[in-house]
Length: 187
Ligand code: ADP
Ligand code: 5GP
Picture 1: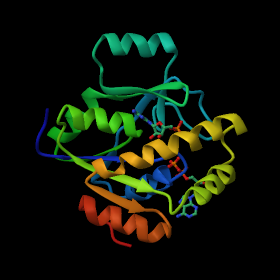
Picture 2: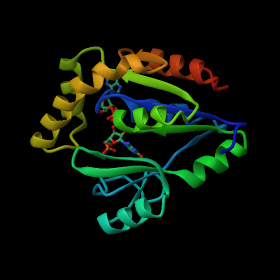
Picture 3: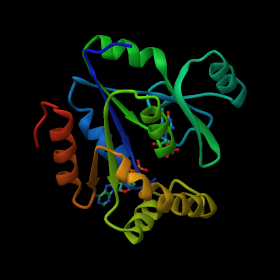
Picture 4: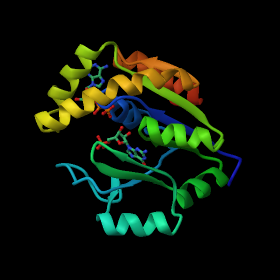
């Protein structure tokens, strides 16, 4: 594994604002996004190879067997995994490599001592989390309830991260994440 770059893991409950924060942090050209593989269906507006690599369950399994993932997890009924090769290349090239992955995946990486900065994005409270998920309007009511139930377990794991950033005011949260990862982009 490369050692020149910096690996940053961002996780937290669904709806906390991870994708919104990551999109803004990625305005810095020094920061590169880890494009995960998933078996989840593509949402409107998502692009294969930009947001995710959308794979069938068989294709995903083949990659697991080939050792292509540094971590993978079953999240909300679908498989998600972080590809090893692009991460190694980005770190060797000295880049800030940003992973937006779920809590299980982050703790797997910590468990095998993958060095990096582990950030937990927390909602200000669970009522606000529900409002944000409803407002995003991307889940069926059943999936939304599943995500909210899981959020409580995930929230308990925040103590295992290097930093917990509460995403109440979005701009404050983004500024704090940029400061922690050492991104050159201000404001
Ligand atoms: P995640 O990636 O953690 O699932 P998203 O980034 O998709 O969460 O955010 C969930 C919803 O909440 C989106 O509709 C987003 O626009 C909104 N949102 C994100 N941050 C804030 C914030 N600080 N205040 C209000 N709404 C927010
Ligand atoms: P979504 O379906 O909303 O895009 O993502 C659902 C959850 O899966 C989010 O918590 C997201 O961070 C997580 N996730 C995305 N990619 C990966 C990955 O490669 N590995 C793991 N473990 N979780 C991921």
